[in-house]
Amino acid sequence: MPISKRLLLLTSLIKDANKGVFDVGSDHGYLLLELYHKGFKGNLKGVENKIGPFSNLSKNTLNSPIKVSLSDGIDDLTNDYSCLVLAGMGFSNIAKIIDNHKEKLSYIDQIVIDAHNFIPESRKYFINHGFEIEEELILKENNIYYELISFIKGNENYSEEEIVYGPKLLKKRDEVFINKYKEANQKLVELLSKLDKNSKRYKEIQNEIDRNILVISK
Ligand SMILES: C[S@@+](CC[C@H](N)C(=O)[O-])C[C@H]1O[C@@H](n2cnc3c(N)ncnc32)[C@H](O)[C@@H]1O
Image 1 (cartoon, rainbow, N blue to C red):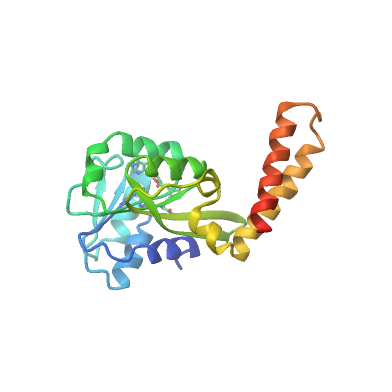
Image 2: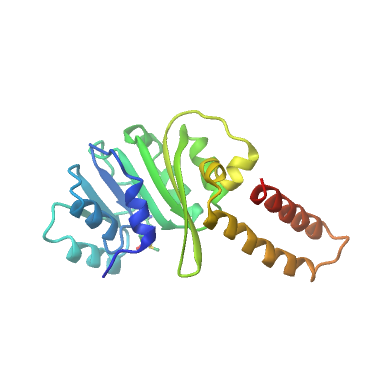
């Protein structure tokens, strides 16, 4: 099966992880297999906490040096890995996985995430845990927008606008980024028409629309 554009772009964010990549929620192992086939020399490990995906992961990586484990989050993470991948999960799961073993962040130089919701909260979370944003990519696949974020250790400060829209995405303001907020605004305008003009919600939505317009027209 050909690898998705999202997973391909995720692997492009992993540039130098000499000590290895630890992929939580590896599923079929496609990301690790792509890294291996690209000639990545470091350790590669995929973790799954469910039997079904774990069996796919084990089968697909059988004839490769990729290590696998049926375990939860980063329970199994050792300092043989310096790059952590958390992709295709909601923010609360990502935060829970880290919260269970905050001490293990000391092994990690890079965290690559694809959070399926609460993206600003995800940025804030890793910034509050001693990371800064190294790179961000936005893509649309199967009608869904994804924001892929690479964090490295650092203490850069960010404005509220950068937390919401992404500092690197804001700088690039590429076509996909502009379209994401144009489409979001179409839905928000529709929602506004159903709300009471004097309600708090109406004002919040109106503010969000205005903020999106400002950002995409800069
Ligand atoms: C939607 S899939 C995403 C798979 C792949 N990472 C991707 O981005 O395409 C999420 C995977 O994470 C696994 N998962 C969720 N929570 C986990 C945890 N705490 N530890 C290990 N795996 C987990 C699920 O079993 C599922 O296979």
